[in-house]
Image 1 (tube, rainbow, N blue to C red):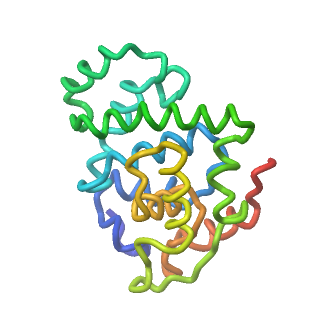
Image 2 (image 1 turned 30 degrees about the vertical axis):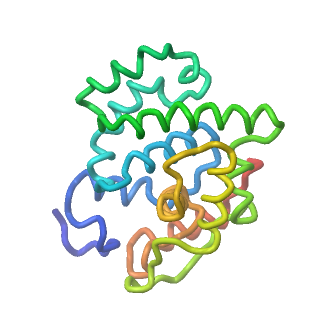
Amino acid sequence: MQTSVARCSWCGTDPDYVRYHDRVWGRPVADGQELFAKLCLDGQQAGLSWLTILRKQQNYEAAFCNFDPEKIVALPESYKAELMQNTGIVRNRLKIESVFKNARAYLEIRDQGQSFEQFLWQFSDGKPRIFARQGGDVPTSDEVSDTMAKALKKAGFSFVGTTICYAFMQAVGMVNDHVVQCHCYNEVCDEMRRFSLTT
């Protein structure tokens, strides 16, 4: 692999991580269902590496109806037992149950007249936060992730602690935590400046 391209140190040289870092991480996401999927997947990561979940992402999408909340809540109770036998996902009962809980909470927010993207992006005032990280100053949580975590838990979501919420915000472009030396930094900054929830 070419070593002359500067990247954030966390992605190393693993091809799956490099691809995710270059094409996905930090790019602003406006679609509510895509945000829901990412939040659920971040919750599955708890206690594990993100690479583990990233490599199982397609299995999760197949197991959970491409993270369509309406389809998830329509699944029979017996399906949860099937998921506990699914070797393509993390077979943790609480984590599996969390996807169902989160789907119900997602629909409740929608039924109250607010889109999920509006609900989540309100915590960063509807626009990405751009930082100039040098590498040693990247936090694992902040006041915004604290507030988001508290609101999500109150709404009925699980596996949404402040650390998970901050990792989620990094991934979906609510913050730009690419270090300034990273070859993606300026490109992501440009995407963030153009970003609008209404477009």
